[in-house]
Length: 491
Figure 1 (spheres, one colour):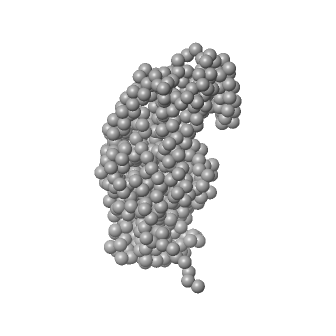
Figure 2: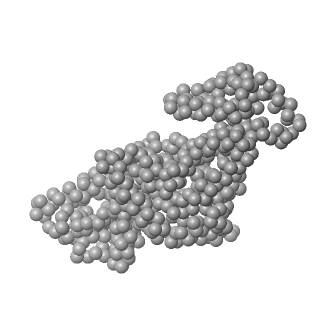
Figure 3: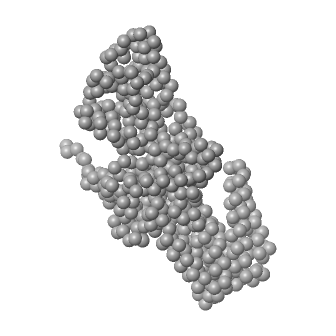
């Protein structure tokens, strides 16, 4: 029994939020153990420390744990010698008290932080989903850690805290699952954080940029999210979570490019529908990046590729347009970006109105003024719409950026320019890594088993194994046979 308790302590004490110390002072005969992120400090002071301090000041001798019930007016108090009960209660917000004379017997006191003490208006704003939980993170790191511990009730959840910023002294938490996450990734993250010499850390997005393997890339190498369920899933896959105080966004890594096209909603719908929607997102990204460059290349250099039936409408739509296709496309693309930025900086209701009304008015006026063709207007609108299918905002910004160099290259060399641009892009992606993990995995290096949750989301019987790309310690998340076994009751 003592061996089981010592094993629990050896794991739990790796986490900075786990407290294990003599009660009141070093001469005290009692030892207390609890998770700081799960209890309410006021309850610890009011219901335990203060009454015990009063008894000690009154020279009242307390040597037996069972005497605690005489002066601690706590409704939920349990006495037990079962280690499994002790561990299960500690990870739900209880404090465990032992006597140095009998370490095998425990008094468990409920000091859990009540949910009404947390902020209630923490619904997700930018990562919305119809199905699934809507709860997101807030700006308080203690509340965020509490929310994570509520979802993952295991002592294997390790929290390492450190302070960054010579002026701000911002609290940073590194969270991972012991026995699952690759120790090399943990060491890399902690080393990069400890070597950061910055004056003020405003947001976790700064850590994202400073820690990246390659800071000269438009592609995000860490995934930034406000959703708790996405973070919980990342932890179970063996990824590392980094939380910054005063930031409602949490970053996870290492990541691959496919992680940015996965929505938490994929796991709440049947796998066939989820796979379809994921393929639609990937197709939407390709459409958004390539459609306007293709239009520019075809109308500038490759008119023979236009079907004869479409040739007449295209000629009529561009009959009075004085600009070459590349300038026409750049004009409309920049107009769309102006509307996006203006809508994002204005209050929500005004921004939505501006986006809708501004798009209609400017688009119609541009066609009537012969500044652009109505066909291009449709293509640009569809490209902008397709870019919104990306669940992660940072990757959406990358897609918006990639269109412009491809448009310029297509205007200079046509289809050859697009091919050159895609070749440079692919070469760049092949060189990218996130915490040493190839960014294009499982395509490069090729890992057949990891395709179960990349382009499509396979059934739960095929996603029980964690990705080999993460080089995790424990490969299996759950037993695939038991997870899909039908438990019908025989009548």
